Image (cartoon, rainbow, N blue to C red; front, side):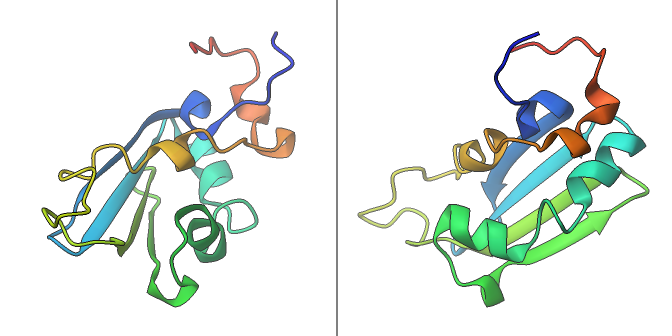
Amino acid sequence: MSDQPLTLADVCHEVRSKNAGPFWVTIDVFAKDHETYQAVADESYLDEQRIADLYDVDRETVRMFRLPDLDVVKISFPRRVSQGSLHDRDIHAGQHHVPLAVLPVPPRHTAGAVGRKVVR
């Protein structure tokens, strides 16, 4: 096994981002199973402050929705620039998920991923 720590993308089915209107971005984190969901939805790992730090937004503007019945965490925050404006470099917000997807997951949160095939 690699010495590299597992990332959110490694332990989840999918991490994706998209527009939530011209002024907001939404990131969806789809866990592979409920055990993984519990690990990534844990507030000691993923909370509004971590998102604020990753995306340089005010903590108070970050909205997080934990959906245990779906094993999904949904995160929304304001875009730095409005969609389609002169300085918008990702009009569909399709690449905004990358900083979150490559976030290392502490070993205590990856116990359920041990033994699973991880494709990098």
